[in-house]
Amino acid sequence: MFEIFVLYSCLLSMLVLFHLFVVFGARVGKFDYGGFVIGKLPLGIRIFSGLYILILLASEFFVLSKMEYILFGYEQIVNTVMLGMSLFFAVVMLFHMVVKNSWNRQIWAPINLVLMTASIMIYFTK
Image (cartoon, rainbow, N blue to C red; front, side, top):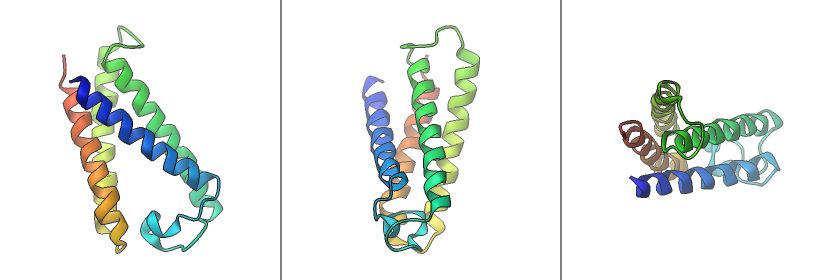
């Protein structure tokens, strides 16, 4: 199970770094958010990326709690949040699948599929 945790953490770290680049104005518009904006993304999308970073960091916090590294004794809350994160990654994956941008379908959808699968596996541990 530790390998799944490491994979989950590495993918979350990669997503957090990418979205930090978006927040600080990197020209990655064609690679994310449907590829509708070439170059630097508008301020609203950059703010949304900042919120997405907070969601990803909260997910990592609850995974650490599930693996009993932090926040002991809150199994019911942690399990509920982990199930919610699995559903969240499933919805994000579906959104990446329906846009016209091939980067979303070929890169971000499989990453979210792995995150969803890993979060389900972590949910069913212990």
